[in-house]
Image (cartoon, rainbow, N blue to C red; front, side):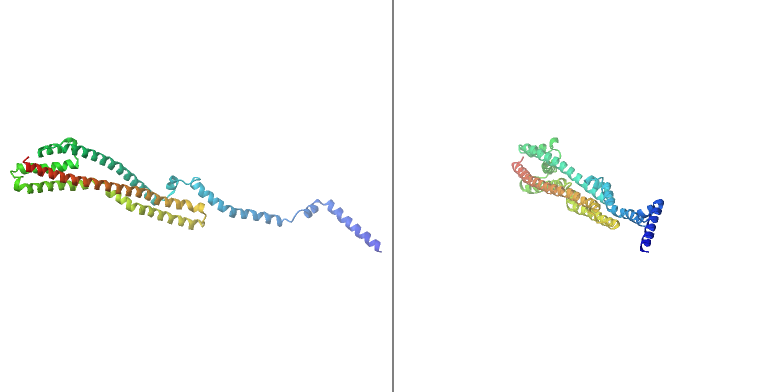
Amino acid sequence: MLNSKKTNILLAMAGAAALMASSPVLAQATAEPTPATAPAAGAATPAAAPAADAAPATEEAAASHHGGGITPISMFMEATVIVKVVMIGLLLASIFSWTLLLIKLFEFGSLNRKTDNFLETFRGARTISDMRAIATQEEFDGNPLADMAAAATEEIELSRQSGLSVTGDHLDSALGRATAAVNAVQAGLAKRLSGGQQFLASVGSIGPFVGLFGTVYGIMNSFIGIAESNTTNLAVVAPGIAEALLATGIGLFAAIPAVVFYNYFNTRIAGYGTRADGFAAELLNGISRQLDKGA
C-alpha cells in the first residue's frame, strides 16, 4: 500500500515536469518578474529626473546670461535702465573733471609764464606813462596784473586830462581812485580763476551719493529677482548685486579725483591771489613815488 502511494506521487511530479517543458509560455511566466513590479520601478526614474536637474539648469542659465564671466562691461550691459543712467552720468562727470584738470593746468601754466614776463618788464618802467605803455602791450593782453596796472595808470591819466591835480594835497584822492580801479580788476580776477571750481565741488560732494542711489536701486531689483526665482544660490544672485555695487564704484571714481582737483586748484588760486595782492601794493607804491616826483 505504501509503495503504491509513492509510485503515484512520482508519476504526478513527472507529469507536471513534462507539462511545463511542453508549454514555453508557462516557463517564461515563471522565470520573469511580475509585470506590475517592473513598470513601477521604471516610472519612478523619469519623475525624479526633473527635480534633480532643476538646480543645475538654473545655474547654467545664470552663467550663460553673463557670457560665462563677469566683467565691468558685462555688468553695465546687464544693469537696469536706471542704474545705467546713473553710471553714464557719473562717467560723464568724471570725464568733465579730467578735462577741467587739463584746461586749468594749461591756464595756470600760461598765466604764470605771462605774469613772470610782465613783472620783469614792468619793473623797468621809470614813469607812469612807461607803466601804462608796458601794461597795454599786446603780448600781456588779458594778464590780470597787466590789467591792474593799466586800470590804475589810466585812472591817473584820466584825472590829469580832466584838469584835476594828482600831486600835493590831492595825492591821496588820486591814489584812492587808482586803488579803487585796482580792486575792481582783482574782484574780476577771483571770478575768472575760480571757473569750474563749482562743478568740481559738486561732483566731489554728491558723486558718491548718486552712485549709492544706483546701488540701492540695483540691489532692490536683485532681491526681487531672488524672491521670484525662489533661490538663494550665489551663482544666480551675485551678478545682479555686483552690477549694483558697480554704480557706487563709479561714483567714487568720479568723486575722489574731483575733490583732489578742487583742493589743488584752490591752492593755486589762493597763491595767485597773494601774488596779485603783492603786485597791487607794489603798483600803488610806484605810482605814489612817481607822483611825488612829478612824473
